[in-house]
Amino acid sequence: MCGIVGIVGREAVAQRLYDGLKRLEYRGYDSAGICTVQGGEFERRRAEGKLDNLARQLAAEALHGDVGIAHTRWATHGAPTVDNAHPHIAGPVALVHNGIIENFKPLRDELIADGRKFLSETDSEVVAHLVAREVENGKSPTEAVATVLPRLHGAFAIAFLFKDHPDQIIGARMGAPLTVGYGEGENYLGSDALALAPLTQKIAYLEEGDWAVVKRDSIQIYDRANKPVNREIVESGALATRIEKGNYRHFMQKEIFEQPIVVAQTLQSYVRPFEGKVALPDFDFDLSTVNRVTIVACGTSFYAGMVAKYWFEQFARVPVDIDVASEFRYRQPVLEPGGLALFISQSGETADTLAALRHAREEGQTIAVVVNVPTSSMAREADLLLPTHAGPEIGVASTKAFTCQLSVLAALAANLARAKGRLTEDEEREIVEHLREAPEAMNQALNHDEDIAGMAHLVAPARDVLYLGRGPDYPMALEGALKLKEISYIHAEGYAAGEMKHGPIALIDDLVPVIVLAPSGPLFEKTVSNMQEVRARGGKIILISDAKGLAEAGEGCVATIEMPEVHPLIAPLVYAVPVQLLAYHVAVAKGTDVDQPRNLAKSVTVE
Ligand code: G6P
Image 1 (cartoon, protein in one colour):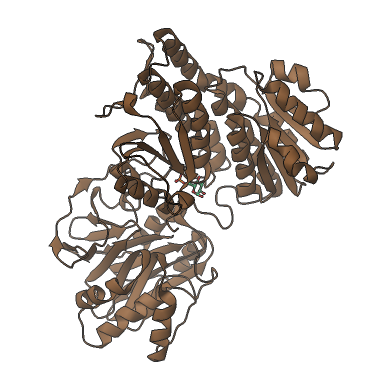
Image 2 (tube, helix red, strand yellow):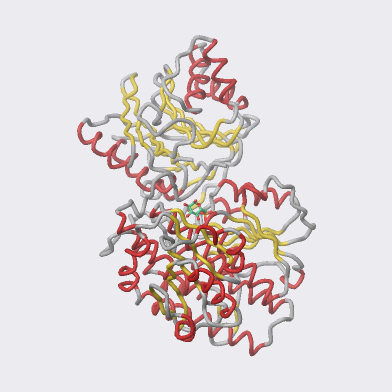
């Protein structure tokens, strides 16, 4: 995975490279490093762990040079140590790499047999040696890179620096994003437009197999056949300002509290309140022709998709298949030509989702994308672009992007229902009204912040926690469990309430908190029966329901959280809030790194 920045500059680059890495930290934070070239020598600083460690090194020992490459790592091959931190140097070549070189083992064996010494356990160092060998044999940097690239299997974005050619960086991409940026008398390279935003807004996205020679006054791009090509230079529109936490203790907390505003902001693009209509952005596609929707996503975005399956089927009566992206790609799904495939992603860069999208396109699907980063690969490759307007999400555990995804998906469900003749004008007007009530209902949910903080002690000591729900609250239970796992490191499982008796019930004793999400409604009584089964075995229940539900089933629970009574279409948006807050407060009680939990990254750009 990892983030890459490179600058061929007119003046010192170390600080600017570091700032670029700060903006790429969402791609991983296991280690970081910068390498510059100066007077025929490489200068390098590397540090284990978060970027602050690298900052301390740079402060203690300044790094000189006008040309350099930088990297923030999410470890794949090799532990997150300094030796495995990028940039890697092999003789006259230094490189930073994002992705995985799948055939690194035979390449490494070949290089070792050739007498080359490896200093790290990474797959990346292999590439540095391959290019170094070509350069040492007399090839120019361009020739060396052009010779080596076809030998690499897997997905990668790489930036090379050459000791004896200090006026250039060569970048290459295959399966992982890479962008070149055009400045005044200097040029850049970065994993995304966001990394380059303070440096330039003029960028070009490299295409699969492209590689580029970046110099101060020119950028020459080649395609995979080594033919010079032009890629369109666009205004990136990426935000150059740094996002701050304000008065909040953590970004995640801030993002949870931003939800009513960003959900309202998102819904503005999808409802026309005065006309009582839901609306999608203009595109040339007739939703009434959709007979099946295939939804694909990862992580929290996948759970948003699971909620949407309930809605699309219930309201529009359109059948939905849903897969996690890493499974979808390889299970040879049967896709009818002309179908609609819907991809959901905060970042728009998740490698598995992006590959699934491309597979679906090859299979003749129309590609709809619900995405938060408008400059992302998925946004650029969509036929029907359905943006969420959550703003930059910094906390690794997704919160506001999730509820914004749900808002868009609810509006899409209503659109589909209308197109399929399943929604009268009055019903549509009613749905618009309910959607408009969502931000206020979420505000009411947020008012329980202090109560929920007071419940953290019930969950923080637990080894296992169970989340139960039925209908759309089943994916919400999965999401609740994921939030808790991600940031508090407590083992948690989400289960369909009715399925609990087929296994997880064996886990229940008086040490296992069970969080039940159960708005009053047709499924409520059934869930209450499952609660009784938990209670009979000594399980401690925290019930999240509305006043009606709590009056009926709140007695005997160790804690209850009262939600406003809302329409089923907006209930998941509202019930997301207490599960997020509970995970947050438990993590704070445990003292974990809430915004950058161990081993995770915000955007997963490897398979
Ligand atoms: C990572 C993040 C999750 C996110 C998932 C999918 O695992 O840590 O928070 O839900 O990727 O990311 P996407 O950007 O595609 O929504």
